[in-house]
Image (cartoon, rainbow, N blue to C red; front, side, top):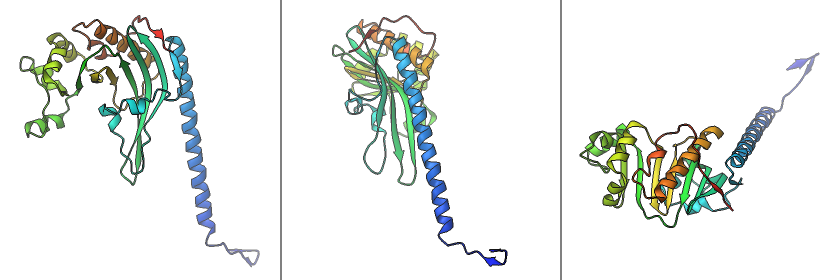
Length: 259
């Protein structure tokens, strides 16, 4: 480059330095934006906890990341180095004999070349008087139907209700107990309204919309209906699982603030 008869030489390392500086500024900006969004989320969830008269903790002080490792949702993280699944924005209360919680859960899926963060809102109930069968209920997508037809996988079906069997993928370890849990009334109800993913095991029950972070209004409704579910299960009513089937208008639930 020449200016006023003088040759200006640009060092070969100039462009890499500029490029590196730009990349650093971009990454820093993205990190700051992500932190800002998370701070806003925490503020909104804390405000919601106050509306619901629940205790709130921004971090996972209960160790749910390890406690719930037996559930499918908490086994999905795949990364090359270590684990980093995080539970945040934990709201907690009491419904009868059950401790109830709603929180955000995120984990990383990585193939070594790229990584993706998956986030969702999760409801969790813990009642040491329960004896739930180990089960998982989710929508039956086309690939599961194909796997079943070629004999690679099977779920629990109800010959007397082919519609329910066709629409939902229900699996678990003790089939007789699961069949008893999913009464004809529950099957009929769930056939009309698509459910959240539900997993149960002994004292524990979780529910979530896969890869969906609920906003404050949705989280409020979801939590209230899950609390109604918890009440119904404690009363051992046959319709125990119904209220997870649909997010609809909020209901009046008496929730005692957790410690």
